[in-house]
Structure formats: structure tokens, C-alpha cells
Length: 162
Image (cartoon, rainbow, N blue to C red; front, side, top):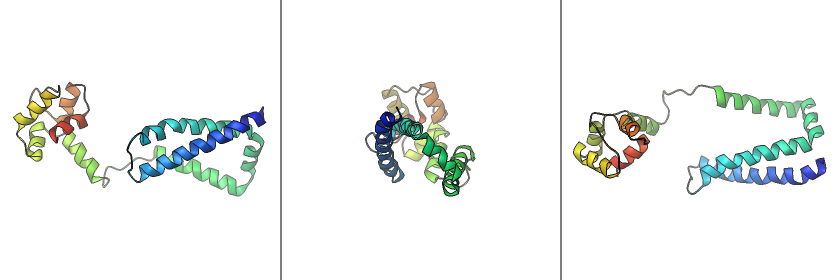
């Protein structure tokens, strides 16, 4: 059984690694056209399955790594980096100024955003209405308008800055 599993578990791990390596590198360089992001996210499950099956098929060799200091050091570093990535709090200070601007725009009143966009509030309210987004009061925030219309704030901003 182990030989049969190994004959397809290893190619599955290798094939999914190729997909994740290429899509991950493209995402790193902000090349995210087409289906790069969803392929990277969803096909990571193939990698998990492939590696799990590969580990099962090569169990004796896998277990032997835990008695070798260099291998154990690398495995430990992987666990530590993963734990830090998952559990370390992200500071909002500093950070990406574009992300801060977007958060500020989402929590700003529509009339303020209109001013920034160089448009009149009435003009934006009409454009939003055309897209099926109702605005009760231009003093509402972009986020409130989005929530009231079951939309995302970015969708509202997209109409404002179109």
C-alpha cells in the first residue's frame, strides 16, 4: 500500500508545490491578475493533502528526522515562524498608508468623501442610486451606506471615484 500511495502522493505534493510557488511569488510581486489568488488559496489544500499522504507513505523516514539535530532545528523554526505569523498581533501604527487612507475613507461621511473626490454630494447620491445603492443622508459614512444596502464599502467608494 505504501508503494502505491507513494507513486501518486509524491507527484501530488510536487505538482501542488509548483502551483503554490509560482502563484505565491506572483502575489509577492503584486501580480494578481486572473485567477492567481483563488488558485493559490484553494489549491493549497492539494499541497496539504499531498504532503499528508507523502508523510504517511514515508512514515519511517519522516519519524527518523526527529532524531537528527539539523532536521529538528529546521522543523522547529518552521513551527516557530508559523506560530508567530498566526498569533503575533499586528501593529496599526506605521503600516501601509494606502490601507490607512482606505479605512479613513470608509469611515468618513459621504459629503466629506465627495469633497475629496471633487464632486457634489447630490451628484454622488445620484450615481449611487443609479447603481442601486440608496443614501438616506449624505452625512452617513460610506461604511453605513454600504451596510444599509448589503454592499461592501469598497463598492460604494468605487462608484464615488468612478
